[in-house]
Length: 443
Image 1 (cartoon, rainbow, N blue to C red):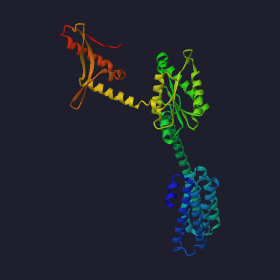
Image 2 (image 1 turned 30 degrees about the vertical axis):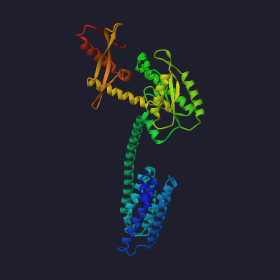
Image 3 (image 1 turned 120 degrees about the vertical axis):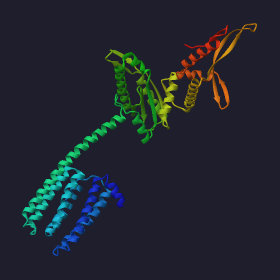
Image 4 (image 1 turned 90 degrees about the horizontal axis):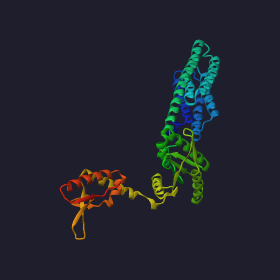
């Protein structure tokens, strides 16, 4: 239990103060135990009171451990009990009780450190009142007025100094906390639309699951930038962000901006798929009717969207992008992901052939072959030049036709290089021949 108390006291000021009180009670017991050997007239009432205080502090510690919630009344009562037991000890003892004065200072400072300056001042007021009462009524203290005055001045001065330092530290801590909040906001929010961004989406994915994810993509947004410029393009995105925020609020979605022209709706609560589809149809109608007034160019701009939904599963965002690609290919404005449109194998095939073509260009494995064109008599009248790729696997070389890689080469911006290689190699091979030859070229 002691380990648990120590661990919780690091995050609970209430428990930390209760633990401090227990330490003070034990300290008083130790001081009085050794003091009795030097002072025969030390009152036994002090020992009895201290025993009760130790028991009281132990009970208080257990109570606070079980219920560490902030309580103003418990804090004030704690101050009175701490300062009261010290005052009681000073009242019933001789000048040896000056050894309790550092504990009195610590109680005042600890209350300020744990709870803030207002508790420091309340502890200071209680301390001044009870310390003055004790020194005025205890005959052992009455002959030391200068000492009493210096102790009171020291109590006030040290408390005020600590209060000043505490305010400085509190102000610095507030500044750092605000800067930390600003940095966290920038990390998890888009600077243009102020919506949550991709980092926030990934953080939220890690913390909890959602029922459905809908990817809202602005069709051909680059056209707006090309036509009107980036500044107006940014204004358009800000307006879209505001419009989607209104829709999210109305239909109880969470909304994120994850890309320049891509937004995410999250359906957090589970609902029937048919109800969700009806809900999305209403959202789609609102998106379809959306028009925007751009003041800078005095035009109404119609923004069109493609929306896809993934009912919750792992890698939902990746699957939403697959569904978006499929919806655009089909010319659909809305699509729901299913396994039949998973493009993972297709993407793997594209990447594999992209690398194969790249390596073949570097290693000079793109070759022309010459197909003869003959007349009715079988005489060769010309040649058609065709591209082939030599694929080497181990000791085997396989000739690959363009059917397997040419379309991918076009998608990956390698086709122009292949065309150049074919032209150069064909001319080199046919420059000394007297017959014609042809090349197949695309626009």
